[in-house]
Length: 281
Image 1 (cartoon, rainbow, N blue to C red):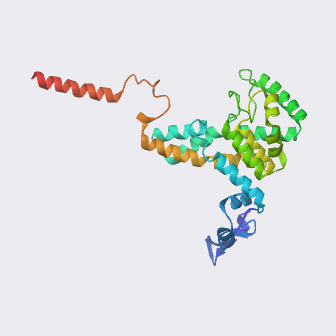
Image 2 (image 1 turned 90 degrees about the vertical axis):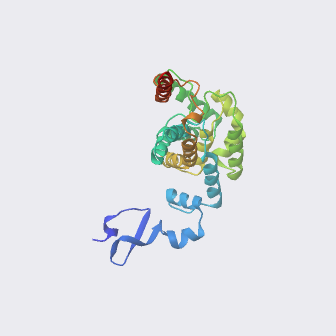
Image 3 (image 1 turned 90 degrees about the horizontal axis):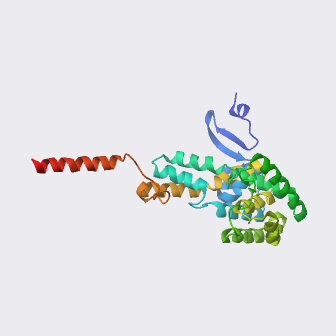
């Protein structure tokens, strides 16, 4: 039985090398020769779009996906998923563990992929209509008040604890709405202040990225996967940096960290006692 009879994938097809069943001679992604065509004529973003959507992107689609990748490549040390990777790096975890930590935390409902998918659902429900958005927000908050009474103001795609929409969010929205001058991004850019007034809190980066993913017609599952993947570069470099710095230079919790039984101090005290005994003798 050939490998083609055993492996079933609509995404990938391989032709084996002669009678060697374990080595591919030609690889096709949705019918495109990966090493004969894509490698020579396509870019990373175009290939990424092809993998997820099964077709070549238009120039606008490729450019918008590239802007998404740039905007979220490094959310920065204030982001919880980046902090998780930094914790792993400064604690001496191996590289894979640092990335897994970033993925685990970055999958959540607060700034993570879970929030992204919920924000996409909100934009789809609103359908570029302020009145529909208002109804969708009220419905979401009614549900949240019952399921999470400790924090009923949480709203996917919005910055619950911020006072105003920050500059990177505004810059990202403006840039993406110029790349894709139709759809939810364009509507959101034109109506941001009114949308924020209805929500009572400012727009967050997850809301902008959710609008972009929706305009690219990714499913929520596809968008979550992409969101997790595209944020890993920042997690990787910050974990590597903290590995080099060491825990004494870790920027978080240093002032509040008190070790009751510090082995380093025990070692210093032991050496001090030895010196005293030698001087006495």
